Image (cartoon, rainbow over all chains, first blue to last red; front, side, top):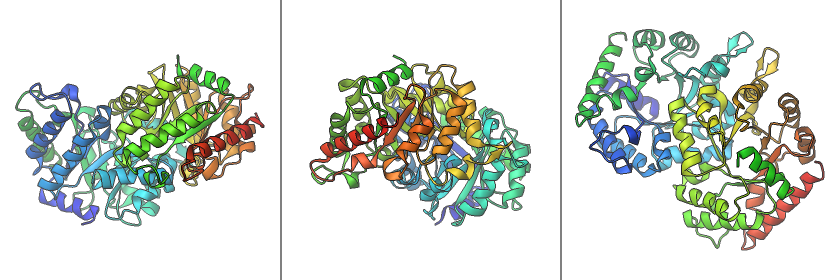
Length: 270
Length: 270
């Protein structure tokens, strides 16, 4: 199944636009888990088991695994989802981007080594840096557009012939990069006005939206700004607010409760 | 020693602006080496031994290691340089970029796990995505500016108030991000006019310049466009043209000859 179809099916099956971000910081794991790759894997599995019927996607953040040499825990976490909950797409958050021959290696990393359904990429280097990802027609390619962090304005908002750079990126992706219908855009939840502007430009292209929860984005404004006509179109990520809802042995149950709360809050405005 | 001092010392000691890019593609290793992590490490060590007195830096490209799960070969390759040729700086080419808390993990990956002297980053997400790298004052931070690939023009050349985006990036880095004097810029060798424009803007900020060799950049135009008043200021990378100069058992000797030729060609125009 192609990525766009898999995502649409997951939206419908779980009646959810929530994506749980797997950003396992060894220093923040519950005290009863080991602060190493084994602890990370056990933590991820428990979070996944507790939330799989409430989400439309998982988004492991590769930086947390790379910092501590836990590549195998990342591979096994994704394999765990694909084996036990194969209907839930996995978006590897890696924000890769390089010249074509190198980007080809990154595509192998994301799609073959880790078997992710989609990967995030950075558009700064242009179309040929995206091409090795885009031509994997069964896989999703999630391109940074207007990100959730304060520094996003530094370059993404610069005025290009009367329009912000992020709109130019959005149009390039929607009109040129999306030939295989496998693109998404990253729009920060902290900027609902920008989400609305991009939605008006790109039709039903799905958005990956980080920045609710720990980063403070307003869910109602976000959903009203970004939803498509059928009440979907959004993959709304929360990481820390779900993963670390409790630091005790009930962390998975607490994560489930936070995920359900976020799902229901979002669904109230779809 | 801080990165900028280490780089200046290496320029002087080896009378060289050449950086050898370590992009070990298992499919292109000489036939007598195994096409796995052990083969990659043996290949890298031989290339390093054969070129260490002719270069100002090494630049391992993490994508080639990540695609085949050879993280340990990357760590050991960098450790081999630091142990045997400690005066040669190592620039980890990773083009990272993410929100602050995630960028912090990437800084740990580059500087602590791999013990690189510098890392390449992508500016698209703005100042807070760079900050976790920049505050490591002893380490180098190499920011993409105008890259060597054809798609570079898609966004980097967009007109922002009469000036291309890459110049705005260059000025931000030179005036704001370089408070610890630990920044460099990536300028593609394929675009000497852009190299000259940025040199005029940013004083003596060092440039990492990929794109000679396999990518076809003109060395004379590049050096005249990018050198600083003291005939340095450039870290000119060649990867494939050096690594794969021979596919036989003489690959290291052939790499040495290519490296010397490039060094001498560059030095003729400094």
